[in-house]
Length: 232
Image 1 (cartoon, helix red, strand yellow):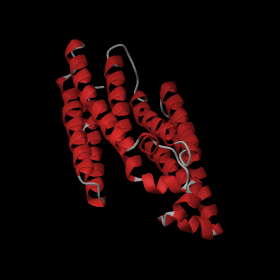
Image 2 (cartoon, rainbow, N blue to C red):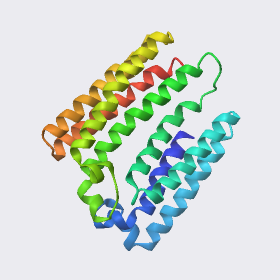
Image 3 (cartoon, rainbow, N blue to C red):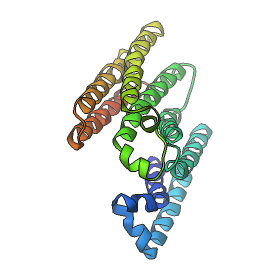
């Protein structure tokens, strides 16, 4: 189900973004010039959508509802991403945070799921702001809005660092107050520390290499969340 949902998101986004990506020299330029490839991509999107929906039927009712919401968000995201960057950022982070709610929820793990979901949302929103800052010049060509375009790169840096730093402090307090498993410190401390490191390195010297470094370390930081999932 996860494969079908994720792959559907990528394919539908490539289809909707094909004209913008052709302007930027992206790989899916063939979807504009080759009608057969476009038709194949649409057919693949339908197959992946069916795979996601059918496989979700083996989950509990809650899982089916969450997966349906994520599929709707992915579809809406693809159509608004070219214009409304900040809204697209929020939708992306909603998808990431909703994943944790697919597992069965009860009184014993409700606070755990809410904690990881909130952490994932804030972590990813700070990351998405930086990604849009890197794409700023290309986004201007297609008249897309983003935090970086509206308020500037300095505001993006301050906002992202603020979210990660305050998030680290607040989530640490929550872990102690609600006596959550200490394993939850792994994504909070390691993930946020890697995110802060990547942001500082990127803004100290903006380049393709420092952006790639930022992207890799923040991806690694998010993956540390997987360690905490075992406690749900």
